Image (cartoon, rainbow, N blue to C red; front, side, top):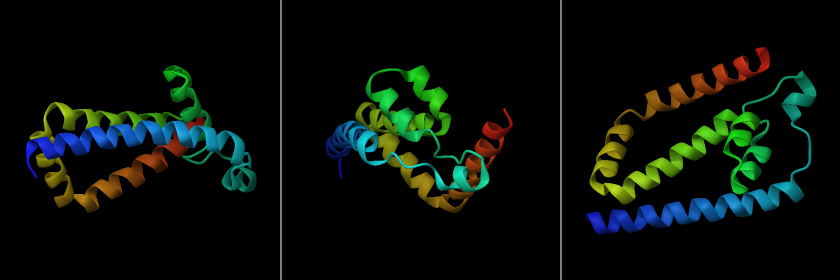
Length: 126
């Protein structure tokens, strides 16, 4: 796939992410009104607690509020949008970065799990 194809895929991914966030926010505000089972059973917030409110805040443009609701989710969304934007600006760098990331997939997964665990511990202490 050439640079134009990568750029088209990146723009499409950015559009799908944006429309998905808006749709997910609408669906979550009406359908997902249940309490978190981890919070109910253990009394602590899991890494996903506050994600619904985070996405809703992003949709209305309250980025600071989104970060307060769930820093992990808002950071993941920013990273996703940043990567999509990087593909629009420099498609070949994005493709090269994804190839390097694929070589270190096990390390990336471990880092994400450790980060989520650390986030959970810190948010329940503070």
